[in-house]
Image 1 (cartoon, rainbow, N blue to C red):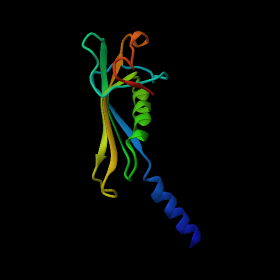
Image 2: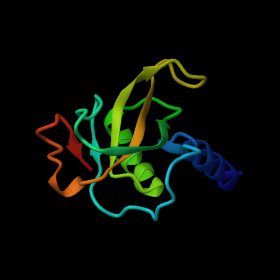
Image 3: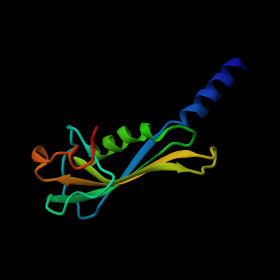
Length: 128
């Protein structure tokens, strides 16, 4: 019985972990996963920054917690898509099935053509 309770608790708690998923845009170019830093921006990039839209990213947690733990997951999901930046990043709290205020986040994955000369911090972003 003790083993059953321990296993049940572990399974329930593992469902509380933060997760992220992405949807690649149908017209997005085929690319390998990206391994470098990803710039997360709460706004779009400047119009003169050449980029390609790659897809949508969503992250959430089923239980209480802060939104900061979602940001690295959003960056990791962008890397899987071959993206080096995520724009329009929004994080906040929403009512969920198991928690009154669960963290959620979303953003649009893009690939900036000349990422080496793009200054993420000067554009208001954060590198992950």
